[in-house]
Length: 156
Image (cartoon, rainbow, N blue to C red):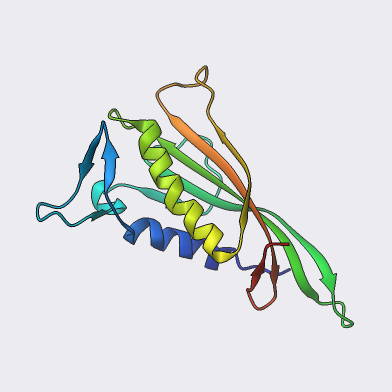
């Protein structure tokens, strides 16, 4: 099995914790007093990033990234995996009283940009229907790619 899930998780988690962004809610951009952008973790000091599926988080906002498929697609003559098709599920949960949809989409933008820069591509995107627990807004997206045993990701 080609397992690079920790590397992918760490790359996304690092960006979530250190990206400099202006966070916009209710038409206002929030930044440091001197006008410099705050990082997401400064703006949302309790942002939680997990590497496993969570049905309902207890801390908000929460981002989960988990590998839901890892299938060998090419074996070499020694019957060793050379490539694997991988699929990652990303979930973003927000219960912000001042724009949970905006907060979740801002976080999704950071995650999407990082996963695409790594070579994965989005294959699905959905939000929680309004009929389900409207106190929590969630986004679920999946990303796919082909990864070799050296960790190089191809769009497949």
